Image (cartoon, rainbow, N blue to C red; front, top):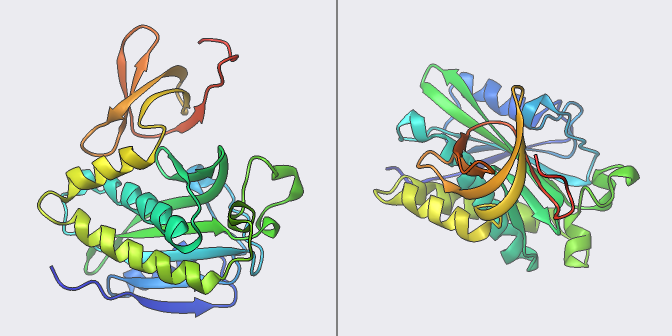
Length: 254
C-alpha cells in the first residue's frame, strides 16, 4: 500500500466541501486530497439534512479516499473517520467524546461533529468522499439548538485554533486509514470504535427509518459496521441505516 500523503486545498466559501471533493475525484484527483472551506452555503448531513456552516465558526472538511478493501465493508470507513475525530479532539484539546452510531460525535449527548461518507464513481474506480463538520464555536449553530448541539470551544473551555484541529485531524485520519487496510485492520477498527462508543453495547435506543421505529438494546457491531439491536421480544435486528437516539429511562417502552 503506498504511503498516504494528504494534500489540502482551501476555499473561502463553497456550497459543499463534499460536492467539491466529489467533482475533483471524478476529474482524477488522487487519494488524500482534502477540501477545507471557511463556510458552506449548502452543507449537507446524513439523510439529506442541512448542515449549518457559518463562516469561521466550524471546521468544514472533506477527503477523497480510494480504499483497497472489499466494497461490502466500506461502511467501516465511516467508523474509522469517527474514531479519528474522537482522537483529534482528545489530542488537540483534551475533550472526551462519545460516538453515536454510526458517526455522530457527542459531548454530554449533544452533537459536536457530524460525518457524511458518500461513494462516487470515477475513471480511476469507485472512491469515497468523507465529509467532517466540527462545531468549533457556538456561532456554528443557532441559539435554539443549544443543548442539542455543542461546540469544541465550550467543551474545552478555551478558544480553539482551527489549524490545530485540522492538523490533528489529518494526522489521525491518515493513521487510522492505513490501519484499516492492514490484514487485521477491520477487526482493530471495530474493536476501537466499540471502546470509544457508549452506544456499542447495552445502550437502550430507538431506531427510526423510513419503514419502522423500534426500541431495543445495542449488542455490538456486525463485521461491516452494522449495529446489532436486541428488541424487547429478544429478537436481534441488524441496523444498516436510520436514526439512532438514546432512550431515557422514563420513556415509554415500544
